[in-house]
Image 1: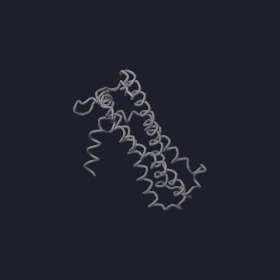
Image 2: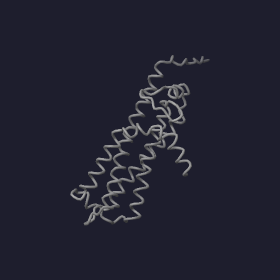
Image 3: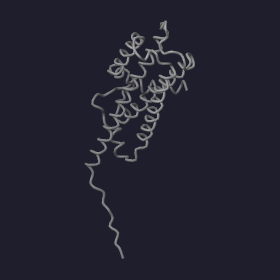
Image 4: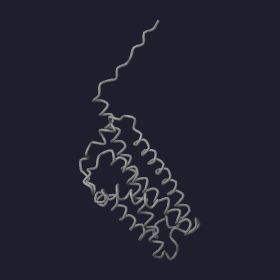
Length: 200
């Protein structure tokens, strides 16, 4: 598993690290995570239990994770070879150059969007399960003392949820753009000829 993760980060994440760092959703998630960590004790959610909050969060993360895997599978098994070839040879508007001089293409970027969004939701699931094991479902989300480790845990959870929500929206928009591109590609092609069967 470690070797596979290292390979994924070297081949897929590292070439896009600058683009990922510049994305607004990363900084939005970091800011909102910090705000939640500092101010959550004054909000109504402070009276909720860890189990109540994580039930909603984990349910969402599981559904979104499944959606991303399904989308990745569809993207890998596109039946139209001409469209896949066009995506694989089309350079994006902002070229992302990898370590070995490889220029990213629209198809690899499409696959990365699905896989990266799936990983973001997988992290929510892992962190949520760790919180459940460490705190128990009946533990208050914001205890009376609300010490540093509780603030840190809530801040990290909020960061992951906000980032994953933003990534999921980007995935939906990307899927819509690919669909529109496919429709435009079909419109450029001649209509398929229909064979007329003669009746008796």
